[in-house]
Each structure stands twice: as structure tokens, then as C-alpha cells.
Length: 321
Length: 176
Image (cartoon, rainbow over all chains, first blue to last red; front, side, top):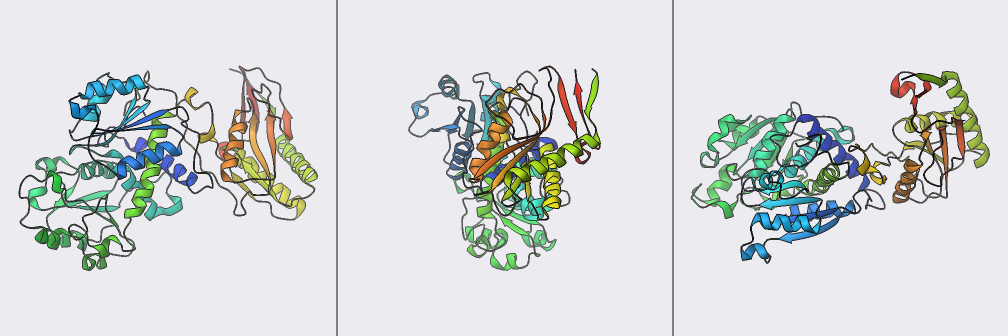
């Protein structure tokens, strides 16, 4: 694996390999000494052009548990705010000797540009680009679903027949896009539930079913309900009348959670808008996997960094994803 | 490519039985023994050895698996390896006599990695090394305590251990 840019082009075997290596990484995290010497001497740069807390610290924790050196680069307060281009920033990182660059950028496609432009030789991990993709989030979600379903017997299994409902602002959500591609590659059936104004135009090309009524989707008894964050910062138009109306029609409240079958889980990528897309009762219920998702995120990112950095460089064999 | 068989099924069984007796002798019984195999065939051998020792000593001896992939120092010299699960028996390894078990001892780098991996799990009081085939060419100052068979080989040759559980056959061959 040379880069991890999206889940749309991630084949089933590679996706399962990442999930299985994450199982091994998770095992090491229950030991007395959590730190592994695996990536000693490698440098991972967290290049964040957009605010993020959990994704950045998750990657930082993952890199540090594997003994890599971590350099955190936030665009705010850097030369980027003085007008430095992505190319110059990238070449600076190359000169510093970065082995992997974890990049988050408000423009869709920025990680792809970084990986294919020839500006740097480092491996590139997409940590969220615009409204395009957020592959490690989808991988940790798939891992969480698999772990809750199969427990210790998870290795090697895909998500055949598992039904996942993704609810909310699909239009602006890179998490939803990455999940749609990955979950369907792994055999899950995905249903999107969203106000008609927040459904992307090209959704007919996606391997999903689209429903506008949350209660109708929940009546089928899905195995996982994934709530998306209402991204107020990306909403430059009136997509729904009021927050209260959104919450009433598409929010996950205690009543809707109570109606779910035994064993179904409630997921949220965080940060949550409590009271808007998810109620506190739902977020704190036993079905909620919100904190498990955070823990699993570290294992997934350890697996991705390991697969990117540990082996011999496979440039020659065209090992691009 | 010519392969010749250096150990047959019965030879492997005899070697394991002898190693089992040697382990019991040096440990003065089966007390506090834990056998940890290095994936993949080491795990099979550790399980078999534990069974033989349990039968001789009439007391259960735990065995498990110790993956060393994440502790190797030669990761960047090979295509990316997938790690294997590590399984530590319920009693843990603190204060125990841990016998590391592997099929072939060659450079000694797996064993060095195994010692590091052990350290992240706990602190055994004694660590010993049991090996089915010692083929020489050590790159580190590491020496096995229990050896099934010494097989002098050249660096270019391949030593293949096949076990019923892993490969459906039971033999050790050497390939030029």
C-alpha cells in the first residue's frame, strides 16, 4: 500500500487486510507496554488545513504507539496563512524528511494532488478532504460494526448481509461517502435517510437505497444506525426550516432508539450536536458505540500507518491503491 | 531445484518427545512452564510439545502464540508482513519459565524480536529457546537450549518444515 486516498477504489482484499491488521494492533493496546518499536526512525507529518481534534490526535496517538516521530502542522498560524501554496508546503515537508503525510484539506481532491503530483515521495493518507472522502473514518466504522457483530471471531470476515442506515446531512458528508463505498464493498446493504434537500444529485449512481422518512427506515430493524453531524459551518443556504423540525423528523431520540431490535448499534463519527441529530439518551445508551469508535480509530490508523510505512517501498511494483 | 527430505514424520515426533523430556529435566518438572510458539509453525510445535509434556508430567502445561512481526528490525527489507494474533495463556508469563518455540533457527533475528515482544507483555523469570531445526548462520549472539536436529546448510539453501496442521504433510526438506 503506497497511499490511502479514498475507499471508492479500495478493493475488498485490501480493506479486509487493514481491518485484520487493526485487530492485531488493538490486541497490543491491551498490553502492559503499549508502545511498539515498529516504525522507529520514521517521520509522520499531520498536515491539517482544517480544524480537527479527534482525527488529529487519533493519528498522533497511532503514530506514537508505533514509535514514529510526529510533526503536527496546522495551517492556522503557519506560512499557509501568509499565502504559501500547497506545493511549497509539501516540498518543505519533503525537505524535512517526512515518510508519511496525513492531510486534511477543505478542498476535495487535495490529497490526490499531493500523492500524484510528484512534489513529495512520502505516502499520503487522506484524513478528510472537502466533501469527498474520509477513508480512515469509514474503516473504523466498518471495524466497529464487525467487532460488535462477531467479537473475537472478527478476523477475515466481511459485512455480508449487515444492514446499515446512514442518517442526516449526506450532501456535505465525506464520512457518508467513504462509508457508502467501503460498506458496500464489504457486502453490507446501505440505506441513506436524509431530507430531500440534503441528498446529493448523483446519488442514483451510488450502491444505496434512499429513503426520506427515518421511522420507515428504522422499522426494517437495521443492524447499525449511523448518525451524521449537521455541518452548520458548511450550510450556506436554508436546507431545512428549523433545527427543531430537523430534530423531530430526522433526529435519533430515546423513543426511536427504544424501537430498535436487540443488538443494533447507534454510531456517530463525532463531534455530536446533542439535541440536534442525536439526543443525549441515544448518545449515552448501551447501544451507542461513539467511544468505541474513537478507540477503534487508533487501531485502524496504526494499521494504515503500518501498511504504508513498515514494508519495503513498493513504488516499482505499482502498489498504488 | 532438488529437495531432499532430512526428517520424516517419525523423526519429528521422536525429536519433540526428546525435547519434551529435556525441558522437564532442566525445569525439574512442569511447574510454572509456559510454551510460546512463534507464528506460524512454532505455534503448532508449541501446542504439540505442551501436550507431550502434559502427558509425561501428568499435569496441564499451557501453550500460546507470540507474534514478533511488529518487533522485527528487518521490516523494511521485505514486502509488508501481516501480523499474526498473539495468544498468552490465562496465567500470564510473569515469574514463569517461558520456552520460546520455533521451527527453524537461522539468523536469530526472530528470536531477538521475540525477546522484545515478551518484554512488552510481562517479566518471565526464565526464558529458554526450543527449536526443531538449527541450520546455523547466526547473525546475533543467540543460542538455542533445546534442539531437534542440527542441519548444516548453505545460506542459499532453503529449509522447509511442513507440519500436518499447517501444510497437510509432515517432513523437513532441504532445497538447493
